[in-house]
Length: 103
Image (tube, rainbow, N blue to C red; front, top):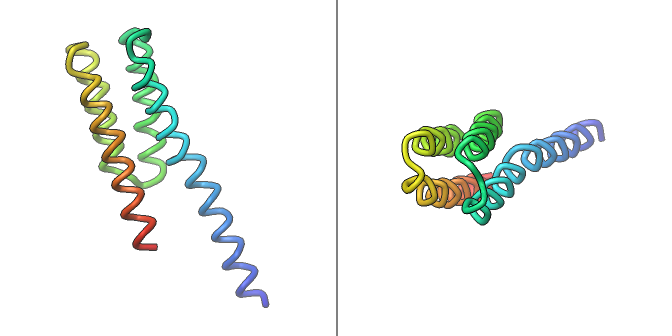
């Protein structure tokens, strides 16, 4: 009885952590992508940095690095960052879909 309760607790906590990090990161990235025309470089820099930290906290090093690269591109060139953000979002989705399938 105690083992199943601990297992259920772990599953709930894992789900909360996934929502706190991965789902929030994806939603924020989507908001950034769909509204990039009205955002300034500093806005994108701030939020992409935050998203990168969320991904890193969740253990998703690949998406975290992609988001961090998007931040660097924003600083260097406005023309390049929209595509990079789009690629990052797709990579986050693929990574999480693969991880969910494994578990």
